[in-house]
Image (cartoon, rainbow, N blue to C red; front, side, top):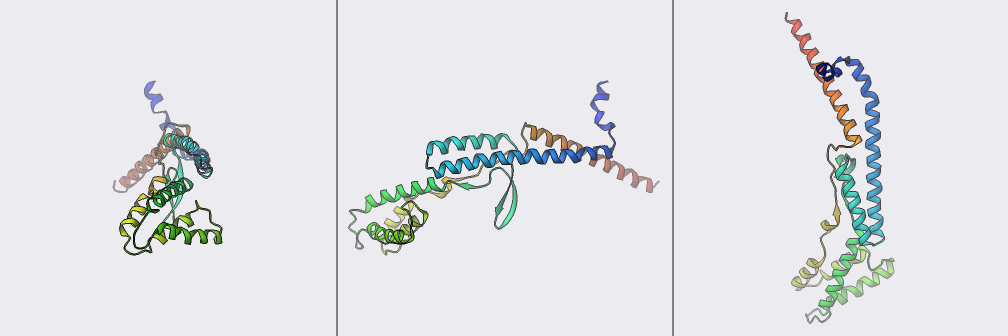
Length: 224
């Protein structure tokens, strides 16, 4: 009886297994889409917290996103080098506003260090700030915008014989990689989606085995 129950699936005909696969594919696609939508909602919550400039909320929503992605099968389509690529996980996203705040803080510290600078070019931070603040007013930039930060760094780099100070300022800016997030999900997880995918895979393997056996038998009969 145990043997009969164990191999019960083999009693289905191949065409029956193929028919069973059709609704399974729709169920799998639906469950994967629901997991993807949930991941997108959690990722959008992180970006909203970043835009609201709430570090506490960023940490909380990041943990929620991480916990979900690490425990579910999340298939995502991202753009990589101009091509659409299928990946497991969130794909890369950036905490732009958090980076801008950190970069501005670094620039403010650089301003304090250079305020009493007696180099031949004078206080280069003050000179760069004078140029960039005028551009900011003209173009409607805020002091925390990426355009203003880029203007400051490019203006500071224009001064000759300032390599050491320039390196010091550039080194004080945080790496953008610290604010780049990309969480990968497992290929399989013990969830409803995971078990449905597993059942689908088992049926596909059984069909392939049967088709391989059938082809081998047909070929062997040609040489009998």
